[in-house]
Length: 147
Image 1 (tube, rainbow, N blue to C red):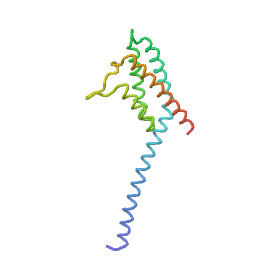
Image 2: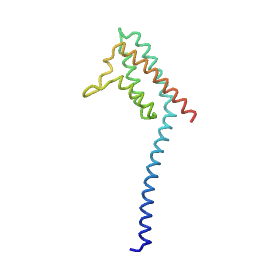
Image 3: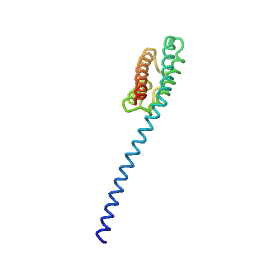
Image 4: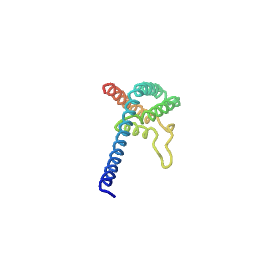
C-alpha cells in the first residue's frame, strides 16, 4: 500500500477519534443546558408548591395528636414534588434533596419505611428541614434568574 494512503488512513482514524470526543462533549453540554433551562422554568413553580405544602404541614402538625392524616398527606405531596425536582438540580442541591428524602422515608433491609410511621417530634424535625430546603431552592431559583 502506498505511503500516502497509509497517511490518509491514519489521518482518518485520528479525525474519527477527535469527532467522537467532540460529540461526547457536545452531548454533555446539551444535557447541561437542558437541565439549566428546566431548572429556570420549573423551579419557581415547584418552589411555590413546596412552600404551600410546608405551610400546610405546619398547620397540620399542630393537630397531630388528634388527626395526623392530613400532615402525612402533605408530607407525601412534598416528597413527590422533591422527587420531581431532584433530577433538575445541580449536584449539591440534589444531594440535599436526596438526604432529606432518605430521612423522610428511610430504607429498611428490603424496602423503604412508610411515611405513616412518623411521630410528632420526627414530623416537626422533618418540617423544619423542609423549610430549610425550600429556602435553599428559592435562593437557587433567584441565582438562576441572574445567569
